[in-house]
Image (cartoon, rainbow, N blue to C red; front, side, top):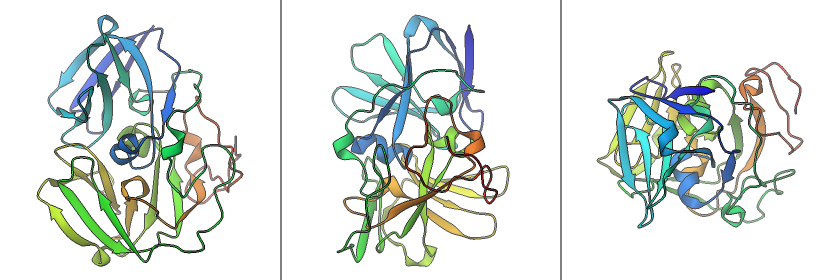
Length: 264
């Protein structure tokens, strides 16, 4: 079976011939920064993978042993290529439609954010939350501080968030004028079909923020360095979630942005 996929704006498209590997969630700091929450990936040998459009494809050398591929136009997190291996890891959220894949046990769970648990309810509120937060992209070209703590964090499973993050997104509301930018030479924005703007680093592809069409503003939780002082509070647009993962934290889960759905 041939699977097709691509970024949100269409500047990167690809095909992969199955079978695909089960989806592996990764909670390492790098994956959390580029995706805005935590990443996940399936994998396929190079000889079963084809780029059919690469106008927007950019690569960032994230370590001495791997590089990460993303769309330089919309910021979608797409690929992870380990050095010397003839396999490519691919974001499951970038595929068209559901893959019908199983999920593997997560890795680097000790690096998870403080606002969620890998399995089960999120931790209780931090008794000593940080008064000031810092956020940086993976390469350091974009950096800001803002008032802490984050407060409630919302996970979004809509197709747009899954395309851009590669898995699903998590963010918290913040007044945009409270961000104090330290560096933003590599900051770029993508305007979505609905008139919103998504901010990301054009050098490394890290997701930074979302500005809705009505002006409301939210920051990606995974971009925060160290403690956030926040707590995952709900899941929205769960009708669009991938079949390879379950929601096991017992939090409210909504089929859309406000209609209570069935939590898997």
